[in-house]
Picture (tube, helix red, strand yellow):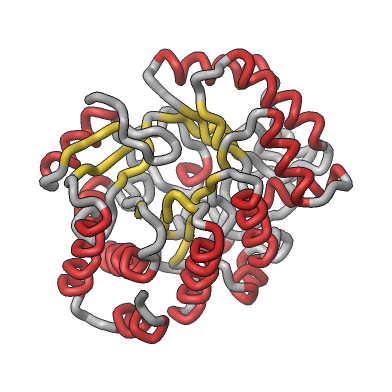
Length: 344
């Protein structure tokens, strides 16, 4: 596997095309069939009330704020009904860190969702949420994840990772769970038989060494457990955020493509790398398919978090399939665990 110093040299290199070609070679080795996948699902944000006040977030509202909400079951069920009618196969449900929602609330919701919509895959709750549920419920992390799993949770998204470096986290989200906590959630979930994804939000003023700290933590977990299905990097969106006052310019397309390619080269033990159209736009996402990406994420029936921070790109299934075909690949709809078994 590639050494850390080799990856740092690639980050510092101006040979963008060469780096992309090397990443494409790894992608071809891992996915020789020439398929690029996507999923039809929905992001459900069950509450925007949050106690963490992260500087990069434009979505949250303080608990008690007039715009703060907690969706009731019927509202969530209606979103699930609509998702199913539109051909969706799963939901990615995440919310703010609410101090009053204990594990019984989540167990009741999950079990009701599984009972009413057994065909919808429940990919829910970021590591910070799970840490928060454990704390407000007085439970261990392991017991919390096991109880959520037993209630119907099927896999865990990688949200809340940002940059897995304690100095960066102290600067941009000092109240949020630590990098070590994020690692513990995913390692524990893998030990309990669940699969998860790993994410990365970069371009928030971190150094290249701090990006590599993130890559190292993710690669080490995967070497130990093999539980990550995919790595999903995207760039910080600065609009409407307090951090945006200090980070004056968002990461460029060149920076995104280089980070995507280096992640494919360095994280060779993770099978899938996602190229983002939601934050980067369709054209950069399409280029990303020649820089190591083999998946374009979700058609995304609903999304509220990154759009609140200024990402307003839109796409439907037809647009994503055409984008994939025009890049020279075969588009295939997948499920949440990156199995491309849908006949289309």
